[in-house]
Length: 393
Ligand SMILES: Cc1ncc(COP(=O)(O)O)c(C=O)c1O
Image 1 (cartoon, rainbow, N blue to C red):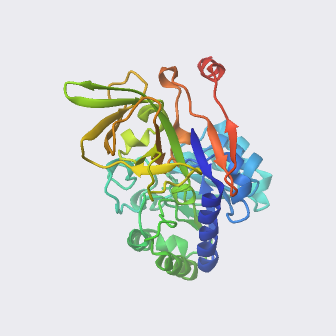
Image 2: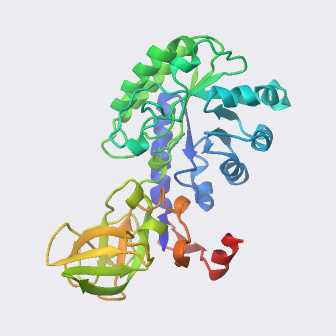
Image 3: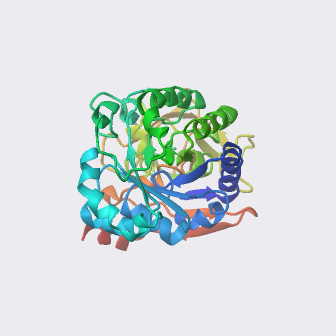
């Protein structure tokens, strides 16, 4: 079961609000990271709206968040542009060819003409600050964003914003480096009165305890003063980090050529694919009667949580219930032998999990629940065989 803590979400949202108010910018939730819309009423007061990756996320934002919508997609088709023109506030394009193709359609729209819809271009400052190639849109030949070289001499009639998204789980120093590259390559555009907004994308780890929020505030203020533009931030992870867990049941334990295995009710590939894609090692806790001071993001009265380690006598390879040989979450050591029926808690499973799950192998999809401030558990959704059948035709 995925369990999201409402107090933890509200704590993040309140912190984001203080930062955006101090910086004087707007801050929207990136739905690609966290789109559990039944939590939107708890976020709506503190955040300015949503960042959508295309028509469906934009629709979700309109129907359930009902505030500002900023949309950027690597590519749109004519029908999507027509639908988005009806309600998105920003429509950002990934390439000059997309903008040239849709410029006439957008500029003719009454919402564009009345100033309700503004258009921007995603730029590539060619300034890599991250360490994982999979998350680096600045690499040579990247398909994301327009380089300064491509932009030189282009007809920018109708464009009023620039958008960049180059960070991933980074501190404000990476933003400072990126903003220097933005200024060098695109500062002349941002200084011209034609440009009214600069969207600094996501990847800002604002709600992490060590994040340098004062630096972010200073950088945003500087950009607003330097260019006279509105600044937008669109974090996903920072909104939902440390707010949810995935609870699993141990279904089987056995040894294979000296390797101890535990097969779980949840799968790496189907329920936490970033463990394989990114890849990363989640924090895992064993629920056990013996007392412990460990605390995952969501706890229940009467339960004690024992963090798993890297090595020890009870080392298990945690695997999912699919037939993919590599459906493995990792090797984790526990304080005692695991037995079928044990509960394991995977920490930090609210963001980039529920938005990415599949029904591969027909595995049971974990239910989704909220934990309220008084500890009450509200089951939002349970999945059935019918959901599996309906996805396939
Ligand atoms: C364009 C864009 N904006 C915002 C985000 C959100 O990033 P994060 O969840 O790391 O804050 C992403 C993530 O990939 C993105 O591609």
